Image (tube, rainbow, N blue to C red; front, side):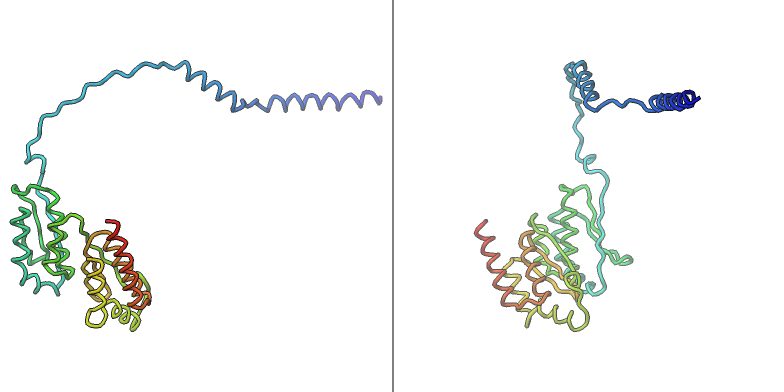
Length: 248
């Protein structure tokens, strides 16, 4: 009787092992898969691509190349209406005569509208005219803003004093005073050393100049906002300006 009882569990264990072996599937190793891929790549067709003919398009006339007329609108704030009216002839002449564009001041929308026409030769002149009018609206003199039309390497940049350091009340007014200086001395010094033009409009700072010069002026103004004394800022600016002059 003992022998019978011992043989029964052995049969069950063998059946369980067979079921486990059937339930598990063999997974191919990655090495064998890579080898098969390499062999398949060897058997691929290596035919040379057929040279296609280059398409030939007829020349396009200048009118079709320009497309439809484009327009730019520059909003004018209320405090710049009078200066715009007084200097309108100085703004109007270079845009119409030199850039061959159409310009008008829309009294209803209070925008300066600049539009291309048939006489417009260069499409980029529209962007130059828009930057010129925008610079005047921000507060720059007409003579300084005209440089945006004559030169291609000039840019406009604006930032707020509170972007550099969140100041309020008297602290904000003192920071603006440090940028301007007594009688505008500090601002004029930064302008002359960095060869830029700076406009202070409440908490806004507008810069006009080349990319490298704007970077120097912006660094100096940020140091003044953070509390550096003007004498230290002057020294740093002169050192950087002299290094830039030696490079070029």
